[in-house]
Length: 103
Ligand SMILES: [Zn+2]
Image 1 (tube, rainbow, N blue to C red):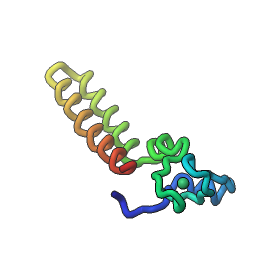
Image 2 (image 1 turned 60 degrees about the horizontal axis):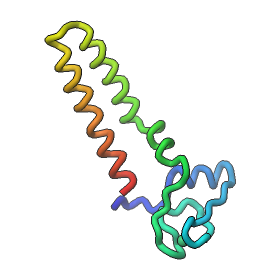
Image 3 (image 1 turned 180 degrees about the vertical axis):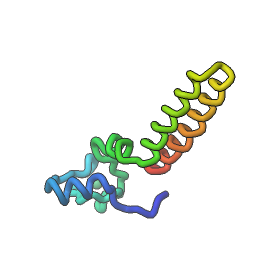
């Protein structure tokens, strides 16, 4: 489990848009806590996954690497397998990081 006990996404919404979240289980008011202070259930905020996906530097880095991979793919058949391997090489760590974020 990550040491971060607050959701960066929810904290941002609470601070900037004065949003109020309620625990889906017990209705306790949340200020961006990762775990409900009342019933201790894990909170995943609406839109949170999309937020992390769009803001992830690794995700955009992965995209540009993927484009580089695609370009290489076009240069010839011999290089196409290298492009695929590269895409896989970039995509897998990004997926792992996303999974770790929500554990
Ligand atoms: Zn609760």
